Length: 310
Picture 1 (cartoon, one colour):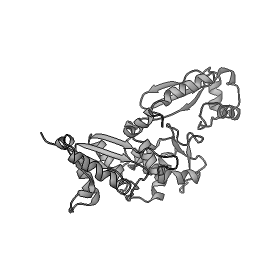
Picture 2 (cartoon, one colour; picture 1 turned 135 degrees about the vertical axis):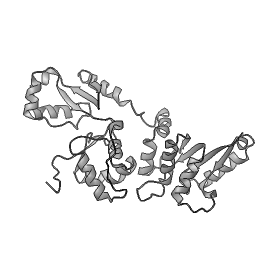
Picture 3 (tube, helix red, strand yellow; picture 1 turned 120 degrees about the vertical axis):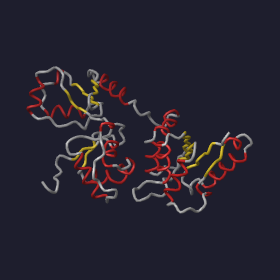
Picture 4 (cartoon, one colour; picture 1 turned 90 degrees about the vertical axis):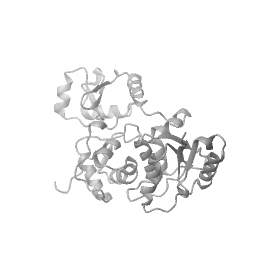
């Protein structure tokens, strides 16, 4: 029976000793060595391929992908992506069997920002953190939304799926005659984190006053329905990419995954390098400004922002 090949991935400098020890242990163990062949990039002989092509080829030729996540994110290429993250993405794309180990940090240790995002945004890595109580599981937000509505005396929100996924929040009948600015103030003081509500026109308010059910927010989130934008150059500087993001977020809130799919850039790269300057310059606004890491966070171009050609 052919031996299964294990690709061991991590930031090399951070886990140099652990990588060698793990590779040696698997190779020399009487049982494991009989069934598995470990690989670490340090042992790869010189080739004519680029470094990226080399490690991605090794991932493709392996049966099992094993990653160790620690404090360091590692070297970043021209797109701001580390080799470890590219290897993980390639293993996922190739449907490889993946094993993930996340280093337990002491009180004095803190993961680098990009490494923390890499850990939290990958379900395979994040799930063990949920099981140990370090993080919430993705998808529990729906139950939280319903509970918060019930806690403040509102009817449960409605969920619908046509072309897009929509959530509709309802107002209490007793407050329907309030003016728009009062309505917004009351919402912001409630326990539900819905500070990203759209402003309502007088006509919209008047039309809905006749109804006992007053819609507050409608969210759009259908990733598969989005098609990447055509004609974008493979390489763009941050300013050029920022202008494109402002344009596609002009009319509606988009999640970082939606933006990532449209512009063909990593969501980690967008969250760490592109979106923060747009937020700081008030060109882009968050749907949940009070909870920056909200699992349903989305972004929209500030309505006060004026495009250069306007």
